[in-house]
Amino acid sequence: MNKIKIYTIAAITALSASAVTAQDNYRPWLVGAGVSTVDFKVPERSVMKDWFGYPDMNIGFRLNAARYIKKGITAEAGFAYASIKKDQNYFPDVEETKLENAKTYWAFDVRGRYHLNRLWDALPWLDPYPQVGVGFASVDSETKFKLIAGLGINFWFTDVVGANVNTAYNVGGGTGHDYYQWGAGVVLKLPLTARENPIVDHVERTKEPKVKEKKDRKRVSANKAITRVETPEEREERTQRVVKQINLYAKTILFDTDKSVVKPQAEFILDNIAIIMNENPDFNFVVEGHTDNTGTPEHNLKLSQDRADAIKQYLSRHGVSKKRLEAKGYGQTRPIESNDTERGKEINRRVEINVIKDQQ
Image 1: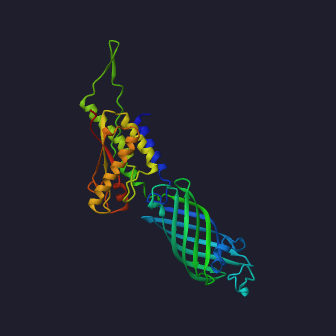
Image 2: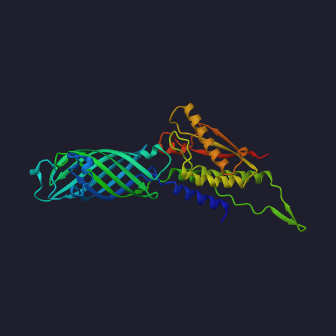
Image 3: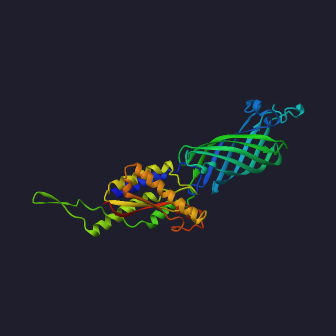
């Protein structure tokens, strides 16, 4: 297998591995299932004394589906069911409210989440979020409106599978009194089949047909090895091939809004770019930083320079001579997709790498 195939496969592998994050525009759907419990006593007593008091818990289940909207915001719909124990008081200070028979509890609600891990680059698998919502809850056919506020955390084991724990304080619903709802379960991210990864889309649209690797340029004549001098046409062909290989990687190195930090999942990609550069020591390179149109042009010019500098510094730490690298920011002046959509903005927050001159 030639080097181009190896680099292409490695780039796709790296792109897949880098997706261990919260929901995003590429896998916007989430479904979850798990255990759920309602607790009517904690709001009426001391939280420190009665939190997680097992006799007051009613184990049931909860199913939910969520859709990532944009900028860390997710909309969720869920259904929960539990059977309330016959010996549980709704209100611990009023004995006559003790249930004579077992009751059923169910609830349907819609919630909004804000995923906090978009605020940092480290620990992409840790996905905490606050949530608020509204819904209806019923206890033994007595149904009432409720308000919800709570917290949750997703722990992503892979790019699609994770665990979830959450808690929500419910105002009203069924009994007309407040209660806590706890939950834990498994969550799965799902791709929307009508939408592909825009980074891969863009690479496929812009890449040209593969160029066959040149065979060994050394010829043997009169039992002596003679190295054939590379013609200008051959050198230009090699230049274009190297640029395509590098930018197949570089197009997968995107940045969060207003950030210039190299993400941990991008290190594998940059390591392979460094290998290509070191295999072509007679080439010098310019790292070009770009932004979307969020913010002022002046701010974006500095931000794009910071992004180019960050990539240059990483490559120089991994064996590429600083003398062979330049960094230049272009701000928002060179978009390759429309900034009118979130999809386009994500692609425009990028770096590109080009050959500029021979190493002297």
